Image (cartoon, rainbow, N blue to C red; front, side, top):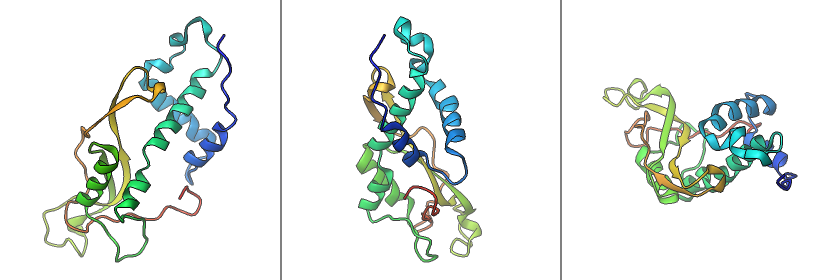
Length: 183
């Protein structure tokens, strides 16, 4: 039997990292584990062998998720490039500036996803052929892991998906998060 991990910080970190205005944390945790832990066989119970302790795969998954979250400080990398959230109608950013900031921080190009109106349907983009979306909503990091992901050893990779964001200069809004979400 393996020694029990010190997981006293895990609930505090989970609540900080996974706090979300749309989901109850318990439901969000279930969703994240069932969707993402199943991507890696190293979280499968049989991979733990005879020393398996009940539910240790769940603790390992969330510890791993928090490890990667802490090592991918997207907000900090954007902030370092003076790209900060704003609800002002006059503040917007360029995709290339966001990509440059994230490449500088991560070492590879992540996927940057947007929603909101398409640029060519906005007043600013009228007459443009740029039909990319204009509201930053997500960033996905791609990497190869060395060994099991729980070890945290990786090699950054460029995104395999093309962005759906508008490419025009100053076309993307990066809104502040809601009062009940992590800032």
